[in-house]
Length: 255
Image (cartoon, rainbow, N blue to C red; front, top):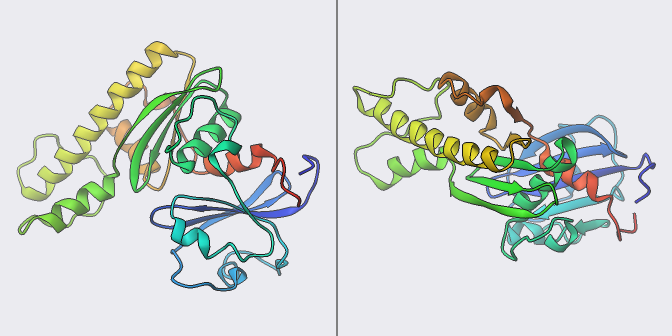
């Protein structure tokens, strides 16, 4: 793709829970939105009617990254379908089974905020991904996401309630079951992430720390409420994956 072009294109990240969309005019991101997973093949433009003004051509390029193969198949009949593969992402030392979402988000973070960078993706799974100044993957961690942790207690036990992700962190020492669950999950997760951040900044003190994913704002607010000393240096950016798509330039794609 000519980097100076003003062509319109769509980015689609097929995540574990939802479809994440982006509408670009050239390099300019115009709009993002989420939709549910599909159960059958549909005209993709039907999904856009409620989100974009005007008509989109059926030939609009669709650039896709996916962690759900069954959902990917639904889009492969689209006229201008392009699937991003791990080998397309110009980062070094990526292991073969790393999620394309993690790799794209880390690449996008570095392109937007410079390398080195640490990306904390608070989605269905909560992941940490570290990239050094040479664009090499250093390592990371994966654990169940915040909502998944709350849901697991209610679905795997007979008496514990299903609790929605709270707006406030609450007291550490809780005096009822609901608050005890909130305290146990949130303070444990926050403390764990803080140790990763602190250790990363010892190694890469100039690094940016970027939060992304559906629960990124909540996570940022929890850090703030907990008076974490690094909270003012945290960046929230929900579009890291799309910055990664944009920065690829679609080398090798005939659009």
